[in-house]
Image (cartoon, rainbow over all chains, first blue to last red; front, side, top):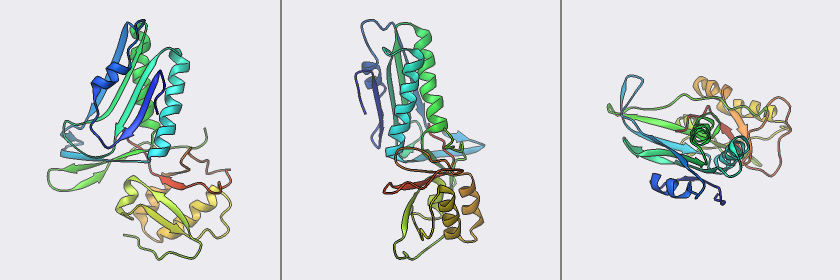
Length: 149
Length: 93
């Protein structure tokens, strides 16, 4: 989903931070904050060679839209937001998530960008399976969802 | 791994994440029976997993959802004509 001030997507294609920076840009915006989450090679004492991301695409897009709407409510309707997440198997170093926010001043951009990332991690229907150097794979434990609103 | 034959008039429930270790294709077919609420459906899914303790433990920590929103187990009626899913604890990023 893309509007004039937010771009939200899940994709099986490589993510591009430059596109986020181009989108989160306006003449009156003196600040842009960019976050890129990448697959790292070590977790919980085990050497990781890759991560497979599974996601519920339709619900994910809805949750992203809710989170973005909340961010606009908090930090102003003129804030520009970008949130994209990968699906499928990724190697170490590949970007799994790109989030960005731009605004007039840095405080709103920092906070809005962090809000996108933290809320996505807690609320978006995304799961990851780590693949280890010894050939084993394991689904990572996460945050339980709740439908109480 | 849990395997099942498709019952007549079965209800299709999509599974994600860790459930794929029990049902790799991610689709569970359950007998809708008298299921009228989300809690009823949870019991039907529990039955479908039988005595697979690992699957049941994951189910206990999971939520039910449509393509639009996460459902409330405690009080909500089962939506009709909407795809249903079981969502284990999430960990994006």
